[in-house]
Length: 561
Image 1 (cartoon, helix red, strand yellow):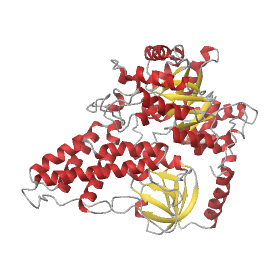
Image 2: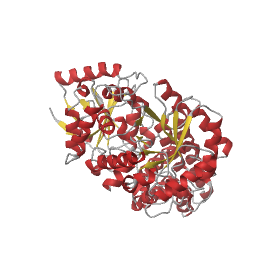
Image 3: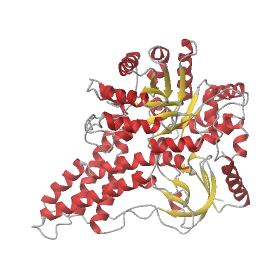
Image 4: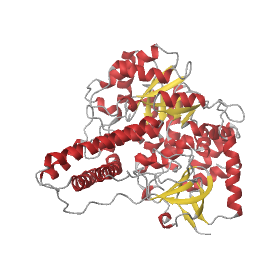
């Protein structure tokens, strides 16, 4: 039985026939000219019309999507009307190039520029190339790129998926997702987890698997096997049975000996919050407020923000809701707040840094959050992203106090914040570890790149030691300063045990992960978790840390996790 090894990013074991992503839209012929040399105005109008149609289609998809999928589609729809892309294409049309060829060349130029910038801006190249293909398809009257159709469920295999495609995956049709590219924190991986789809990324060679070939996908082990046999069939059946058990969370996160670890949800808006409440989440550990600001050329009004935040607060009456202030910049540029021309946006003016020097947007957002909180019963906490120093933490706490918010906190996403956690927590009430960014910054590994997937792994002992340092810093404050995790690491049941063993007090995740994490946490005592954490944090490699932890958690195998 031939095997393909990759990185498992979403648990699950399934067997199904392979379907490959259809061939991309073909490149218009080089040198393709306008049919009517005098028809420049009509050609420009056709380009703009196609751009609007693509943007409206992506917006429509976004309105039907939820959570991470919705945010991804909204961001991609912005690219469909990107002024740089359209201006470059229009310039080529005025020189006689056909609209299809013009947008193709313009897209290549914009993508190359973003790739050269590196970091988060390089991530946007996939959006540009996806939008380019969609506009060309619209101009040619061809079907837009997308997920293949099938009368029967299938395993989707691709080099990688454009954000718009990933966000529209239907878990009733797609059994599992396998890509030869991508990384553990790519759009593909994050949305696969939010949909509960077993997924393996960075699996070299899978594009050569025959159409309709039967494969066994193990999303935890990170393997894809051709021609599965009886053993694989039994494993898939066991996972189906376990999945039924793992579909329900009882609403109480705790270890076997009663040590409480509230399990919270990461949400992107009111609809997400309602679903999370239905799933039993004990509160919200991360409210991404970007949903209020995307697809806008101007800052939303206080009234618009208040209404949006109220929808989330009302879903969790009397419970904790942690609001992350606007994390603009890098992969989420906003025309009224950020500078898209930064040479290295991942290390640039993003998160809380966009208020330096202060344009006032952060203060206005904090006042809107406070006003929304005053009209609800939720226990509102607020945290700033990309905090690096105690001075930044103190400045944020001051803004919160001025707005009437009593529980300010910070995201720990950069090594300096972990190293200085004692001093930083002297200025604020709590910290929340954003393990996605903390991992990529600690390991200097872009989280979107498949070749760096092994480095960009939250099991890295260096990252676990950053978590431990942060918790140790909080203990200098007589145990009154809590440290939670709201990054993707919290959704891995084995890693969740390690995080609790390191002293993390709350875990926030996609609602689909609540039941699995709760079941595994409930199988160990706090002392067990501490012992397992020590085994992981002292391991020499990420793979060894993971292996050591999983060896101590036999419940994972029985639950198919």
